[in-house]
Amino acid sequence: MPKCHNFCQEYAQVIKMLGNGRLEAMCFDGVKRLCHIRGKLRKKVWINTSDIILVGLRDYQDNKADVILKYNADEARSLKAYGELPEHAKINETDTFGPGDDEDIQFDDIGDDDEDIDDVNIHFLLSYTNWSPYTFFHAYF
Image (cartoon, rainbow, N blue to C red):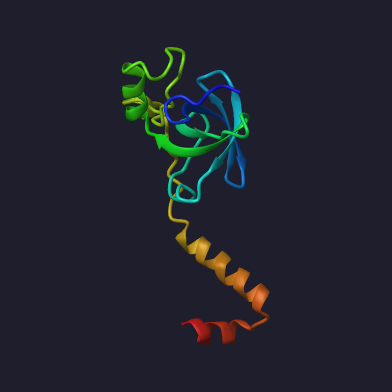
């Protein structure tokens, strides 16, 4: 087992989200690890595929680690510029549309369908409540 360097921490890139607070990550030391998201990060920091994370290595299990921190794209670029991440590391860009990329999107004007939607809602409620239209009208209007 390799000796822990840098306080037993390693940078990694998320390969796959597994659910239940677990993910698969490729650490930049070349080892693929099953990582556990700490309770402090759960439901507070959303981790996605290809995000750059910091993991804490385990002394007793080399193929498992714990997620300590998630880096945003700017922080990851800074780490790459400082030489902490290898050159082949691809930084996750959350902005999928660049400036001006939405010019080709066209929306059709559907018109005033609000009355039709209200009619559908009333018919839906009447069919599931077994009320007469008279009872429904006096209950809601």
